[in-house]
Image (cartoon, rainbow, N blue to C red; front, side, top):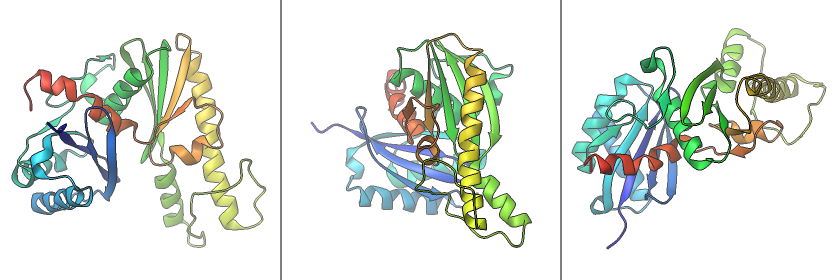
Amino acid sequence: MAEKKHVLLEIGNTNIKIGICTEARLLCAYALPTDTGITADLLGLRLLDVLRHSRVGLQELGGCVASSVVPAINPLARQACRRFLGQPVCFLAEDVDLPLENRYQNPREVGADRLVASYAARLLYPEPVSLISVDLGTATTFDCISGNAYLGGLICPGLLSSARNLAARTAKLPQISLELDESEPLIGVNTATSLNHGFIFGFAAMSEGLVARLGKLLPQPLEVVATGGFSTTVARVADCFDHVRPDLLLDGLRLSLPLLSGKGRY
């Protein structure tokens, strides 16, 4: 009997990432722009397009699991998965709690994305006493885990949102790629280079500095995981990361599947 495949939905402020996985591994991932004006029908049709492109039939599906920081989209995702995929969708931290002690002052304030990424980091890297998960996405978040406890962390501006905000407020600044080939910063002799290197090496330096400061507060040994859309770019020029997992959150959704089946969700 063929192994069942599952649909993963990572609903973020900038993108909705859609993954297809088995319990053993992530098979493929796609990113769509987040649109709070989307309808359940359009989202469902996009999910069908993803399945068609990845050559997965509806009869192969075992269920859908999601995390979301955009509450308005959650009911649409539930409708879309049930109507177009014939499957319920389980939202982590909403429908099912993760087996990670949450020490936030108000546990419900923590975004599901931060908890799922922390859960994934703990399962993927069980050896160190402490971990820091650094998500270089819409915001830059630093999440601290010690033992089996989520301790909390820091929320900082995101690389892309910062660049867009600066460009929107400054008429003469050019659009930049937020990519580079150099491993050390250049003294910019044009505006594009000055911006590109300023942003990328600036966020690398912020990551290094905050990891060093947070590391002093955590039991050792410590390892640091980079994730998010800009993790590969920033990690290439930063020296504070032990692991780079751009799809850490999708891996967390995949790793949660045994929890859901144990509760009879699928």
